[in-house]
Image 1 (tube, rainbow, N blue to C red):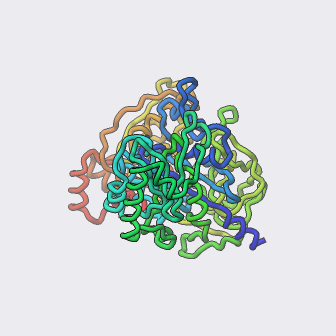
Image 2: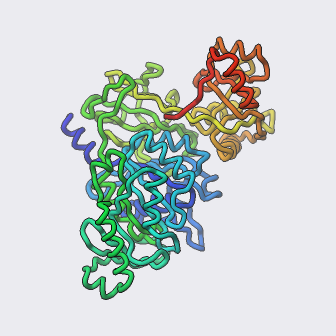
Image 3: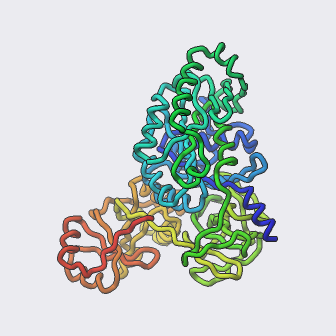
Length: 524
């Protein structure tokens, strides 16, 4: 069995796509599915009639706002490999959800808008990638539109992100007049032909250099000159430095028109690493061929409104998963039956009978499983926890209809477990006066929307006056209450936190009473 597990793991590529909002991440996601044969027509392209929503953006609020909020797992076959794509939120307010997803992948595709380059959110997301030592493939998107010079973008990648860009493909034609790409590894020129709204695979024509020189003229000459410059500085794709997180293979294209999409998909198979032994909390590593183990990186309720279910998304880390097997949760020591195991394709799901390291499985009706939990067959294992981001904004919430208090409490508990927001409760008051804590304001909008739509408990969200939060303990909490003006609350995991209305007051207390426990909440 062990040889089979290792062989199956070698066929897996588990990766995420990260980008700034509007850089084209969701479009690229669906074009991958199109090129893999998993979609007959690209639904991300919003035709004038119908404005069909992207497959991965199933939540109502996502469809209204045109952004990805909740991360979605998509699995598909390509070139004899199983690709597990974890779509991530593009908005900075959901960076904590992105962090959780990145804990479950082995590589990342970073999408940059060719006209905008590195944007603040791109930088923030890449810092998360670096903290996890994830190899990064870069896609310079939207080259069919007017934009910046590609050499300028390469300089920006190196200066701001610290990765050495190594272009695998190079554009022929300027931004807005995109003819095709030169593959620097083979010397081949691939010419693209547009299709109607990019809804089908773009016809690709391989053209030899002599013919390209005649037919493309100055555009070909310019591309050759720039490629020669890249050759001179040794900016060639290097697998070792890519896997070490030192360089990033760069591809140029347009997801909307399907130009260059296949090259990126091929790079995921050819360059991205297969699953490896996963590090455990004690510093050891779980062998791929060992017993089945997994960890929970996401919990999502009500993906299927008709069933009001709760799915825990788990990354298989070792062994062979079989539907129906009983796994034990390391946190509680309780067994969990996996009778209802699914692969998820957007909002659609299919029963999964078996899975291997690198695969993502949705465990349905996963009551009792929380984000960060480790699961094992018989040999106990605990994988490192998924740290939380420090909240930056705070709010209070109250039900608009006091008769809906039961639904309000139920929704509060569920959305806290999912990590939509952090719900902080007064130890003496419970759910009657919760404080919501989040990385960004949009999380509160999602929280309110889901309470209303899914739990029939409309709420009023009011800004709370806090600007700093620290982890504390019972002894320090007692002293902080004596000082006064500091709110002591409890997180869903039982940890006490102290809320401060003024960071200057916090700094003064830290200076005056250094023995108090006031720890930062830092992801890393």
